[in-house]
Length: 340
Image (cartoon, rainbow, N blue to C red; front, top):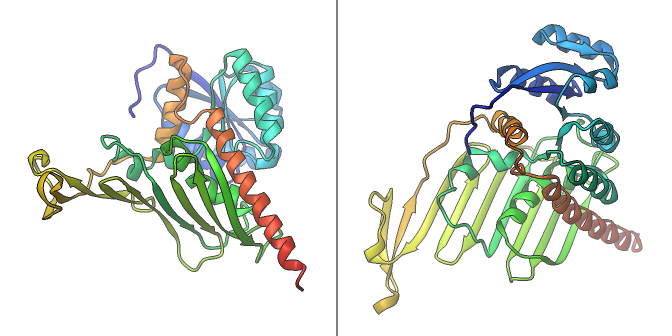
């Protein structure tokens, strides 16, 4: 994953100047291959404040901003995604939209259809695809058969307009779907709302047609933060810490295929032709700003007319599974309520 020098600077606008929108605005000012034309927010006073802070023009009319850019970065509340993306597509603008892609599956389907028809770049902000922990594993053949994820966060009112499944768990769902090359066979899930009107803690078991299984947990009411993924595949165990950006790999390799400089090698296992050595490796840590890299590669995809790493279709796949999990949880809650 690396950015390229583009033949011209892509003109970009940021829609939404809340906490995350401010960060996006700051980063677009730093990206060499694009020009940040301006920002827009329904709350124009807030947009003006952000504009003054980062010395960028604040627009009081979305249509005027769209007229002056090649592409937009939508960092608004999830419920506003559909209308904002559709307005941008109507003016033939490329779109980056934060996750989840939309709140409804039919909305995502309609947007993807429009993007395909108009040949527009459509990227969804699943930032963990660009996390150093995952990027450092690029040289490995990842084909997990069992995945365990834990994504725990302390409570923050921001994001509670949607269930924790769409707020946090969807990050891991997206990664799992990108690694397990198989259709989902079945899903079981449980969860409850605790401090908000939507589901605050959830656990799901996702079974795939090829036999792979993922056990996924997400909470936004935990005392400490955790963002970890553990993967088991034939001859390997892989651990990722998305907070630190560090990965660890334990592999079983034949004695004659030992890596040149293993971090550590343990004893041999097995007998005869099946004898293998346990090798521990810690892939080189990649010094990257995941969000900045994500936005840089969005700009690159526009310039090169290529499908982005996380396309609208990827966002839809993650949303479909997230909605299935939410449905299972709601059914579970209703069944429990029958006994009270």
